[in-house]
Length: 479
Image (cartoon, rainbow, N blue to C red; front, side, top):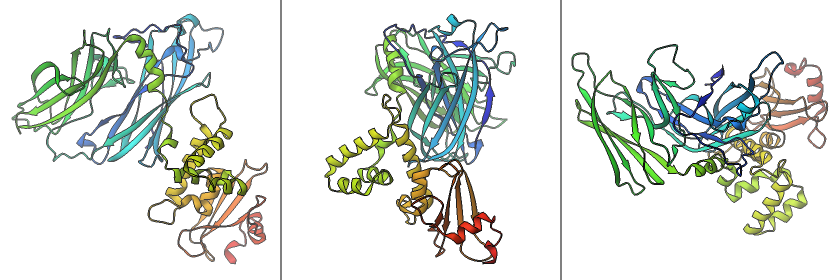
């Protein structure tokens, strides 16, 4: 499911944490703070809502004045999230474009303002990862945040009471249904929430706000009863650090929302967990959820921006065998023979040299070209493999062309022509000057399409196919 929207100005000063940017810290890229929160609401049936809240430092963006008649400066920000399956293959995405305003050029450089927004997808049960990408439309600077594990469990109305993922926020303002105060970008169930996606707080902060949802409470109109909420703070060893007591609340229905203020004034720097226990007084059933949080110094909060927003390179998740397969079509025959003659350590060093040679931005941590090749490799294995394990797609004819050229710009599929074998044609209109064509034919009906014609030098050429294509397939179905 793709959700596209155009959203407007969000200028919010962080109500709890004011951070002064030290002059000695130079954030050359966009610092992105993001996370994934899963809401297993059983009313959604076979999917769960996964939200990707993110916050940004406003002074990371370039502002401009669109015309001489106005007084405000504006930044344009593109946000994109890509959901990946366990193999790292993209399976869904959504994005948004929004505008941020500043009163003046000096105001745009103010270092104590944060921007808050979120992206959402409906996701089937499974284990995923995600990549959140932020692009400054004006300066073209980019920042990314990689979320390495997102577990979406199957929800059911038959299960006992359960709690959603927990979220922390800098501030929570209950506005109900007051349309004059509801901010759709950050509102959730009547609360305007300034989320802290990574749950990192400064040791000068006084409090944090905790948001969660409860499902499968036993509820009837005649017997509403109550549920109990118990909240504790645990230290890094899972021992109770502080108890916040419990409260009883009437059930508003089979689901409930809670927002709690947690006093963290005076907490030492370190790693903690907020423990939330919900107890349904009707069924005597309970569920427990945990939210890890970190308390660090204000300067460390800034430095953490550079660390937590670093992109987790998908190359590191590949085996040596996969890494070698990845560069097969980048090497000459002589280079491949040299590589094959090396031991494992020598091969690793050889791989480093190859990717360094194909790195379009060597000054940056990641290699965009290598990431693109990885995406092609994963796609080829998933879609063109002839074995059950889906590991040899890169070796097939379609896999090889896909690895070398990427996604086609146009294609023709004939799975059941009036005569002859099923075939597919890939067109790359912008390649090789006037364009390139690749024709694949399924000779044996086993979905292993072989390359039978191309107009690219060095590839197989078939005059009959060339004539058919030139004539617009006029004679193709009479063969």
